[in-house]
Image 1: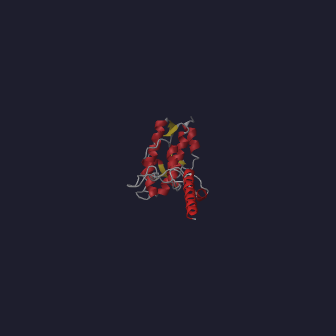
Image 2: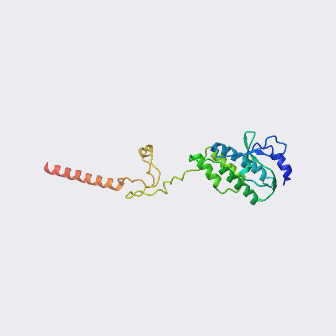
Image 3: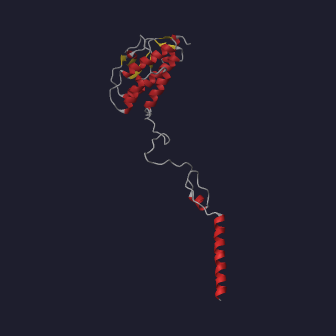
Length: 218
């Protein structure tokens, strides 16, 4: 675990982190909302990414609150006054506090992006990385998916319709070649070899009778 003082020095280099010092000529001012959803997504992504850097050092922010989101030199920042050694529970509390702070700055529009952002900020998220990735997904336009469309197997059957035949279709070339029909398709009755022989016997007998009659008449 990195010592808190050394960690703050490293975190000061993060683009979305402000480590206040007594020598700043102009102190940061607390962000006031409502803010456009695009700004909330940018700030939320950056602040969550900064929290990831805090947490991987085995630390948590000391007193993360709505006032921790500030404006400094014209840019929104996450102000880190101090950090402390902490476990997963305290780190999850950091994430929840950041969500609450961001949600308090979000405008009340009902467009899909704002609704998706509000959902991310009010859902239970346990890690800063999960919050960062969820905000990044909304930021990139990957809104929560619509309910899945039922597959044909799950779709209700139409009343009165017969059972659907199973098996693949048979192509024209296979039909012309006399190939077998696919499983479940209609079968065409074929003439058997025994039936053809029977007709030959009948025709031969008729010819013999005709010849005999012709000889008798002659």
